[in-house]
Amino acid sequence: MRADRPAILTTAGCLALAGMLAVTVLLSAATPADAAVHVPRTHRTIQAGIDAASAGDTIFVSPGTYTGPFTIKKKVLLFGAQGPDTTILDGGDAARVLSVEGVSGGGIVGFTIRRGRSNSGGGIHIVRSSGFLVAGNILEKNWESAISIWQSENVDVRDCRFIENQGSAITMTSSTGLIRSCEFLRNRGNSGGAIALVSSRILFPIRGCNFEGNHADGANGGAILADSSEALVLEGWFEKNTAKLAGGAVAVVRGSRVTLSRSRFTENEASTGGAVQVDQATLTAGLCVFDLNRAKGAAGAAMTIVGRGPAGVNPTIQSNTFYRNAAAEGGGTIWAAERVSPEIVKNIFVMAPQQRTFVGIQQSTPHFECNLVHDPSGAALASLPSADTLVGDPLFCDEAKGDFYLRDLSPAVLASCGPIGALPKKCASFKMVPSK
Image (tube, rainbow, N blue to C red; front, side, top):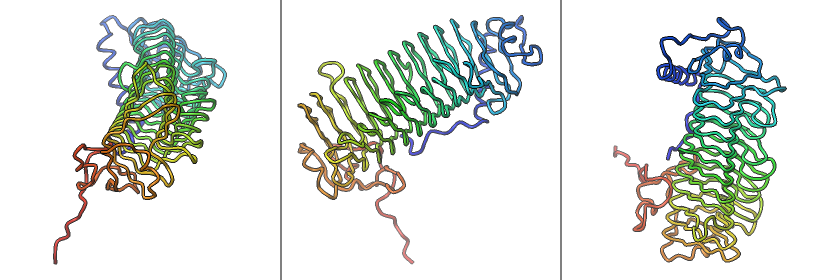
């Protein structure tokens, strides 16, 4: 678990990545007969360059602002020669910027893609394609999603920055793909402000991504919505995302299967499920930190779980750290309903005043094992029906600064059933001072 956010992509990083990817594609696809296509040197417009290119060609685009729309229907790599800060594709708030249709391979690298407008995929719309690469780009202020992926396979989105897009940053429907090392800032959608997955599967972990200030205007999943979908989120950072209804950061619904691992959820907010909402779906959460998340209603400050996915399969919440998450009166850190019995094992709970660790209704009873609870008010202790529950200060290294690693004498480190919590020991309980 990284203690800090994943590294934010810089322009230099975009350029280095773009160059590396372009060289890779050229080496794998080029033949001696391939002609270089340069815009505007050999072809005045980008679309003219695309039309003139042969399958496997790279189209080098010089710095400038180019007005869309553009369409790709063959395997070509569109390459911004000096990176996204100076190579801009603009929809002018009137048209989709780029359509990708029926393509196997190819990609777009090193552009700013902005102000696209369409009913689906104002920035990039990828339809019935496979293996298309979107890398090293900045996508901002597009309407009705920055990237829309429909009935496509193995679409690879990496090292991109998504800023203030409407209708979600990425929507993926009936598709498979990859999302890695991306940053999502202040994007909005009805559900899934940053990423909305519907009947889709993420092939490898959504890894090393930042989600900050995204919002679900109408319903669930301020940052991510998984609806009838599968995903693993690894080493993510979720901060100040919000949802009108449920799942301030993540909503997992309608038979979806989602794993959250080694991720940080801080100051997310919704009416219920301040950080995570699970509704008739399967969740595994491990090695995550949930701190200062808030539910405005009397439900789950960090998590709300309603029902199960497959019959007999309960959510697993193991080896996490929960710190001062708060819900309205009558709520708890984790709230469950409709005959679900989450496995709550080896977690640290540091309670906000007058909060409970778990609230269950409608025959929802958790299985508690080897959890550590610290609640100076004592309100949470009665809600942990487990003989091996530990009570006491977990001795974080510096909780005031958000450092939830443990001191070497922490009861979470020394517990016979431990270790407990998301993060291991990292600092000493006492500092030796040399005598004079």
